[in-house]
Image (cartoon, rainbow, N blue to C red; front, side, top):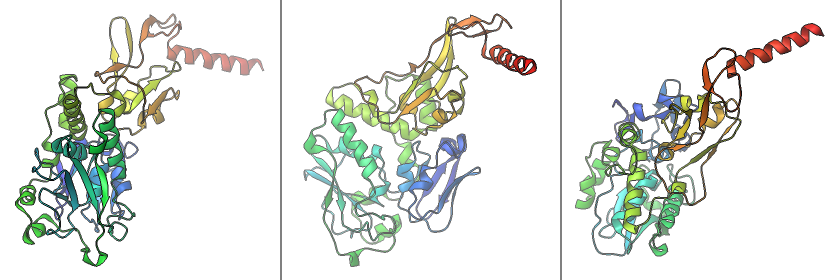
Length: 381
């Protein structure tokens, strides 16, 4: 997979084959650019570009739904040190002498993905809680721009997912406010070498010097419940989705419960669907796909691959498709699901096979007949 270095100072890389904008169009996804606090990241027809002024905060990485972007400093260890009930997560701007033993430091709390928060919760276990330490610097930090750490969206999903899986409420990750004087805050986020030079602990040194895209290479084994062909494609092209499903599967196994489908987007298609297949054609991740068998044809959906870009709904000629980013219900995630199943018929005009849905003419012949009727009516007038 081709990787493009965007910023060597912060180890920021783009995997072009995983980028939805590169695979499809800027209309498919521009979340990284929207998340950039300085506006130096742009998504255009030529792909993703980065101008001067990158802060190294990783917020673009957290916003990327496919894992196309990666940065140093966010690798989650398999095990966290034993000791305190609280596993503190600090930003790199915090003085290294402050975090307690067993703390975990990242360049910016806003760069944590939902997958990383869930991996931390899994590593901490049900008897401990992951706390994101708010030093009250975010409002003054160029990478923050808000009163609280810019990790609310990721934290909300992680808490929701853990709650759905029956995780103890007292062990859900949360933000702790422990203010420090703004005068102690460095202007820039230190790079890994600078962190090590000012005396990071061995735990932090373990994180330093890793390859930039180790964050997305080091995932848990793919979930066994999903089709292997789809898993292989997803693991190669969309590592963040695989990483998210993998940690959710492990959490579900820890709790002894099935993985609920409503942790992922849902798609429904109404009766007005004409089976053009435009939705499947524009889907940048392959979550929507066409199928055919001897009896019928239709559209299938693979929820865990869906990036929620909405391109399918915007492209449907009939407006028959609805994307739900916050589905409800108690369905269990069980792989591909048929959204439509239309029996084959034979057009009485051109004699070609088509998805009949009770009609005798294929869409092309029906359109031609309607056009002829309109012209005939105009001539008579």
